[in-house]
Length: 473
Ligand code: GDP
Image (cartoon, rainbow, N blue to C red; front, top):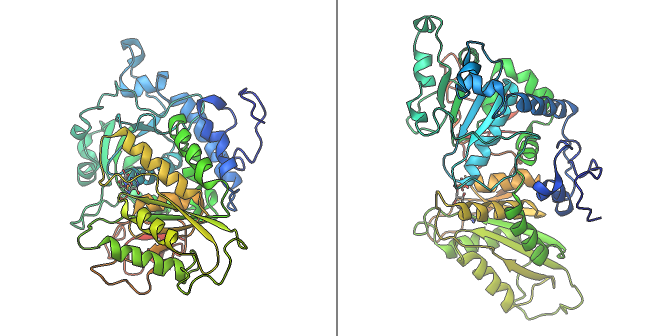
């Protein structure tokens, strides 16, 4: 059973129904082959077409990836003789990190999807805070951008897509830039990037290396690109499974992170009857006091029978008769939630006689950047949440989105609370597990305002938690 040899044949279940390639060395990435022991098999199966696209992509990545001739030729990093004017057939998409880990995982998966659709190789510029977080996702190659990439440090100096779009293509007189910075970061000024329009895509296609910065889950906008729509539908006949599949394909916790995840799971979650994940993201603890949120959590979990109420009358039920054990896994920057719930359930029996155990792996108090251990903790918790049977999450949080989609779960999402008022209803079940694209285009390609997105794209809806956002259903 615990055969350490890498050559043992690997079953379809382990490979997530053929989503993963079978050619990896097991020891280099334990999570890739062990995760199936921790999760129930997904009811969502990757389509044969998606699998063939992934295998095709892997092949391309192997041929064009870092340290290949084609790579050096395009990036101008090889020795002079290989720099001849022979155009390389390989095109690249370089991903640059911004914002928290949830945002990063969402943009990375969107970038990967875009790369697959446009025959580009995805390379990631990981700073020290991302190194050692994930395993390599592509066999016999690397997705890490080599440090001698010509714009490793000064990528902001590269010609921008925005300018490129504005200029008449003739001004380039055949000398199109080889590197282009595509900024898809959200902006509050209503600025449109028209990335979802075919004429933009025609331009971008001509550029060998795109450098992408974004903090958005822009995958839904790819469905709005006429030339890509059909291909996407073939890859994802179930449109609400994009992150579910791509996330499971791309994000395998490194052995260090997996050690933390698997040990925590075995110690606290493996033997319980039901696991409830609670992800509590509070941005302003003055406007939203902990006590209000705690009340809201109880209102939600009681209403939807996710957690039992406390027995105020004094136990009529003998707790020994019903030994159902439920674990609540709390992920939050603040310790008050785990502690508050633990204290409550320690004081009294529950009306159902169920035993409730509350666990909170960390409480970092504040969001930090450029901190590798902070990201490892975040990944550990996102992953543990994704192993739960049911989830309650906070609105507008990409941290929660990643957990829900990886887990294949439709969470109950808590309403935003202000002051001491507990919102009624306290929470709402999401219609799909797909993440929300918070700042989608507001105009179509003709510049007309988008009034009703569903009329234009039946698989895109406004998000429950962010009304102006788009999500796939
Ligand atoms: P979002 O801001 O909720 O959309 O999620 P992000 O993941 O993009 O950014 C929040 C960052 O704050 C995370 O990446 C973590 O670094 C940190 N953080 C927020 N909530 C938690 C939590 O529950 N646990 C841990 N360990 N870190 C958290």
